Length: 173
Image 1 (spheres, rainbow, N blue to C red):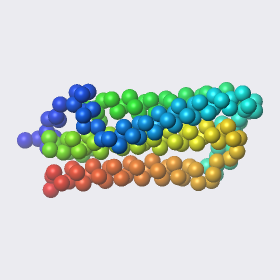
Image 2 (cartoon, one colour; image 1 turned 120 degrees about the vertical axis):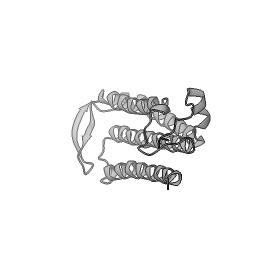
Image 3 (tube, rainbow, N blue to C red; image 1 turned 135 degrees about the horizontal axis):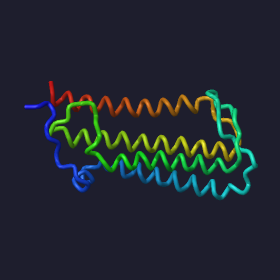
Image 4 (cartoon, rainbow, N blue to C red; image 1 turned 135 degrees about the vertical axis):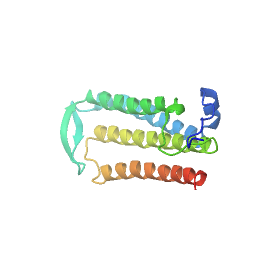
């Protein structure tokens, strides 16, 4: 028998029933960040100077300016990346964990992967929201902004990867 069993039915309804509750909560937070950040930027747009910060160096110091219309490009990037990750969430049958997925651990692996994608989406949305607020404020980013974002993304990935590894190992001693 193969190491990889035939996966359980993963039609839209079957997988939605197994979606972890935390992912629904995280999606709500993402929507709040998207809508809130966009609404705030729209309200503040008229008061923005003609040039706003659009690029920062590794230390968080502004090293590029653009027209205030660039705010919409930043918001479009925020909506686009979160939208792409949300799109990927709709096709769990296509996810590949890199570990052996069996009939016994399929639901658990699905749950772990779903949570990884969902929390990644929240981290990215929070990062973009902060960048929009920094552009509106017109100041530098904290020097630790990029290290914190990278640490958050890396720690999120490693945490869920380790959990998936242990789930796979439990099934295959």
